[in-house]
Image 1 (spheres, helix red, strand yellow):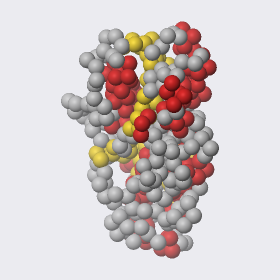
Image 2 (tube, helix red, strand yellow):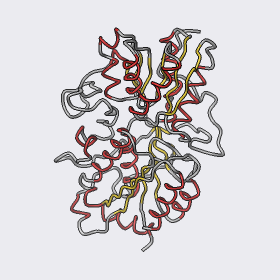
Image 3 (cartoon, one colour):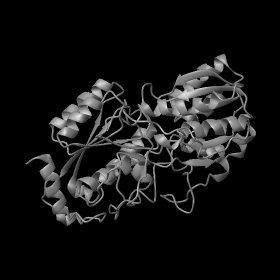
Image 4 (cartoon, one colour):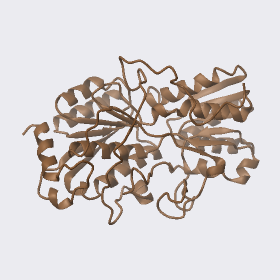
Length: 403
């Protein structure tokens, strides 16, 4: 049986009514969809939470009866992920949901898989092969918006550090390009240190400490994930904090709202990459595989979170409700990435799902909203023979307050 025919047959078995949940009993004793969860870099809380959310969803009815989920971690070498994809294709994968290590190096293998009927869904990081779906917030403007927020805090002048992600990754490149588009407009903003922190708190702390040894008078830090490590490095060096932008770690988000940290000089905004993208990509893929969705747009945007200090609200329960956006330190480690849950897109999962990959008792998979946000073309990021919009780096979350 060809894979395309098997998709159609299983969709019929599952009752392919547009955007409706499927009863688990309909899939009993039937062949399962073989879905691979392919991670490249996996050495931080973000990657663990993203993977855990997918595992929890795959264990939630009806997917627990219809999906065989296999996790593969290949590391930061593109060739290793290429080899992993090859093995998945040869093993009869129906779908591969993946964090790709490179936007271009994997393309030939992805195209081969698509030609053989494999459905590819990338999350957070992107590829330029047109047959793959990219589910990412990469085009929603983290780099430029967070850079402008830092410039505003510094009054348009000062020495700053750039704490980057993984070398060669499309996410890191797009963030940094967007940030530098802003910083280059302010001659009195001086980048005195730039380093790769691999989106990890410990590595960020180590690399920031090295930069501080050479530049103890730094005025601000533009950081990607791992930002709480930069806070720790500053505290280790003395009692002075500086304005920072960072992503969504619980430690950083709680610190922004802490009066003691504010008194030491900490100001900024928590934005950045949501691990929830992995669950969103997985659910979109399953809706296509089961015939519940026809998806024409290949590049799908996840909205940019934006949480300034004065909007931090601590949650009391296991989900985000009543406007809360961070769990207390008694519930999660400082590295916990707060934007892992979404009541709109992922109502089936909770804090334990993110921490341990466990499904919520009594939960069932809920259909996604019919509408999606189509991402803008970004040459070299999510497309090749394409043109970027003229306002590629437009600000959407913050306005300049200095000239």
